[in-house]
Length: 216
Image (tube, rainbow, N blue to C red):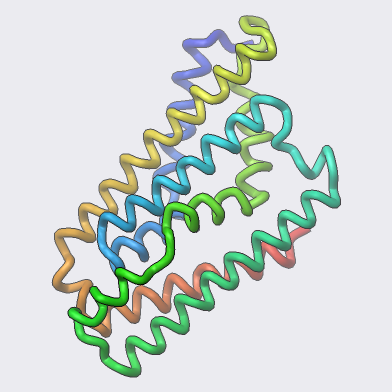
């Protein structure tokens, strides 16, 4: 059984490796930063990291494993999450098509970006509706909870602290991504580049949604 210090150090290493592994969250932040600007990219990243924190607290409280507690609830969450990501990806593909077809100027793109939806909420919703994130935390985080050192409330607080470490890594990684996008803003503002990034990200999201739909 791990002591608290060993648990924190071990989880930090695992969380760092997980953060550096590209995935759906990375694609969403990169796309938002490249197409709509670094600020909106970080807003999306903040929503994603809040979702991670909520899943971490749920897992520490023993509520993360929906598949074990209620297979029906897990299936409903899986389908709802997949449909949401599919809708989000479809919107991006449509936007890419419009951009490439109309060759929208950078000035028009900036005006359109002001009418974009709340990316904090989108980032949070994408994370919360992904049952694989919940199942990952339900099976992964309990291994680092020093059950012999804390009571139920203490374990929840300790689990939330571990999730916060993951959130800190995630926000730092997202800041590096959005910072790189900021330096390349002129290049990314070109309609062809913008449309290509938007379309590619949309395809990635749709593919992830379809894989989630066929998963059991």
